[in-house]
Structures are given as structure tokens and as C-alpha cells.
Length: 146
Length: 329
View 1 (cartoon, each protein chain N blue to C red):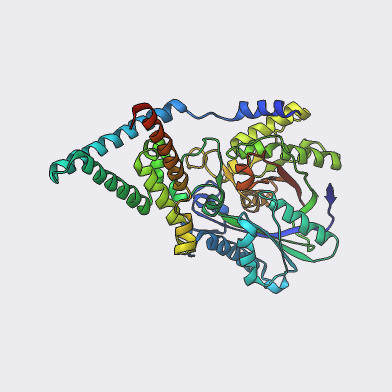
View 2 (cartoon, rainbow over the protein chains, first blue to last red):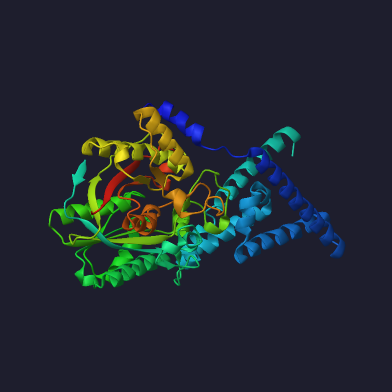
């Protein structure tokens, strides 16, 4: 049988992802994350009398801590599995990616385990984050003049 | 290539499983069930070694034999360099052959052992097949705690070890023949769709077996494939019908039997080396002993890939080996 004909059988029998359902879940959970983030910014700027720029740093620290903490407690992976991009795209996803890799390799030593593997998932986020920041920075200078 | 055997018998088997299998529909047939993924060890890799040791000890106890009575241990697992089995074998002191043919290793192990017994080179052999869900996830996919979303048609690696003792001493289950498969590649690249990768290999070996033995599919009471899952099972049925005009009616897939797919979070079924032998050595052999099944063809399927080759966007080759079991009358 030709590969093309076989591919047809595969396509016929392979279920497709429910994109709409996934998108709605990610939209709602991601939105809730945004509301929580904003509430934290308001809270910090009100309670500690900070500028909203400083308060958003505090907000990021809080969310990163919560992401790591809940991963450590062992149930954040189930939330991620359900909410998908709703929890992966916000900063919680970054914290969770690093924490889960650290947990996975902790038995293989501090340096050879945690040190070498902690950025297994998050490493590419940082690399491409820096590269895109660089490109957009240059574009900004060219288009907006700084 | 098909081998016929005259004096190879399955005398006894043992099964050790993890929490998901223990909560599955075949729970009552397993010898030992663990409640968590660590099996009292520190890591998942060590847990797999523990499962192999447990399973071997249970089997030796059932047989009333010592490890020195065993001629050869043939073992396979999914960890890199087959370490889980090698570490378990280090404690058993049985002459050891470590084999790797991905998830088709279980049948390959039975085939090699049967060949040696049939040729009177050895009197008996111990064949172990094991895998560990978290160990496999760590090696092939993302960290377990990451819980990243997966495709809805992927499969869930089983956890446990299944051991089998074969010998030339007569018992009621005979290894009748075995067919060695060839590697095939139908151009599938999707690492999540292992059923689609492996179904053509299963079809090829079933066809070869029927041709070599001059049989039809009706000869067998049950043809049981390894770990295709629901998707692969349907693909194999359609493929056999379209390409070879063979209707697979007396057919099932062990990946669809070991878990309750509707209730457990296992996507489209089980996978891994241990999937087929766990189902066979518990549920299927039990049915054969009760004479509900007389002739069974086991077809273990394996995807011969690793993460490096998948990241290089190569298509995934697959292989399958078949073993024919018969009840001795």
C-alpha cells in the first residue's frame, strides 16, 4: 500500500483536538490569571504605597512563587493539563516549567541534576525572549527613534 | 521468518503493576500491586528495577526454584541502555541477555528463549519485560510534574513488570511458533500517534505468519496486538481490510484492555513493553487455562525511535514480532 493511501486511513481514524473548547478554556483561565495579576498590582500599590511599576514586579514575584509552590505540592501539573495555555502562557507557566524540571532531576545531584536540567523547558523561552527583545528593541529605535 | 517449536512450554508467569493498572479492569489477575510510582525506592528508575526483582522472585517462588536453576534470563525495558533490567540482573546471578526492540521486545524475548530451548541449547529461560510510566515520560517527553497538554490520541505508558518462565518441561500452554518481524516505515512522523506508526508493522508480521504457516485468521481464537491503542486498533483493522482483504474479527489490542479508557485518564489506552505481557500473563493465560481460548497469536509492536531522531524530523520506523500460543490437549 502506498504511503499516501495509508495516511488517509490514519487521518480517518485519528480524532482531532477540540480547538474551540481548548481556546475557550485558555481564554477564561488566562483572563482569570490577568484579573488576579491586576488585583495583586492594585493590592501592592495600595497597601505598600508603591508605584504601579514597582507593584507589578511584586505581582510577578508572587505569581512565580505560587507557580513554584503549587508545582512542588504536586497538583499544578493537573491544572496545567486542564487549563493548557491559560496557565502556560502567563508567568506561572515559566515558573512551573523550571520547577517541574528541577523536581524531576533532583535525585541526580545539585550540579549534574538540578543545575544542568532546570532550564530544560524554560531555556528556550529565555533564549527566544532575549532574541526577540533584541530585534524589537532595534525596530523600536528605527521606527520610533528610541 | 517463522520458527516452529515442538517442546517449548510456558510453565508459569508473574506480574507486578503500578497504581493505574491496579485500578484498571484486570486488577484481580495481577500478582503484586503498588499504590504509588516509587515502589518503596528513591527514584522511578530504581522503582522499575524493583518491579523486575519482585516479579522474578514471585515467579521463582511459584515455581519452587532457585535463581541458579534458571539457564538464561532475557530481559528488556524502555530506559536508555536497558539499565533497569541490567541492574535487576546484577542481583539475580543468572546468565543474562539484555534485548531492545522497543515495545515489541516482549515477543522477541519469548522468541529467542523458545529458539534456544527448541534447539536443546538450554532447558529453561526467564523472560522479563518491564516499563515505568514516569521513567519513560522523563526520558521521552517533558518532566512529569510539568503535565503539559498532550494530544487526545496519545497513549499512556504502563508501569510494571511481567515475567515468564519457559522450559522444555510439559505444561498446558505450548509456544507453537513464532514469526520474526521486519522493520517498516510508512512515513508517519507524529510521535503522539504511536498506533499509526506501529499498525503497518503488526499487519506485516500477521500476514507473514499466516503465509508461512498456511493459516487464515480464523485459525486463532484471538489475535492480540501489543500497544496500538484505540486509534491504532482501528487503523490496523482498516489497513488489513483495504490492503490485504482480511477481516480482523477475532482481534483485540492489549492497550485497550489493561486500562478502563472511559474512566481512567489514559487517553487512548496503554503502551510500553509491559503492556502486552501484563495482559497476556494474567488475563489471557487464565482464559487459556480455563479452555475459553485455545489458540492465541500475540503480536507485540514497537516504535523504533528516540527523541534525537524525532527532533531531526525523521519518520518513525516500527517493528512487530508474533508468537503463537496453544493449549495442549
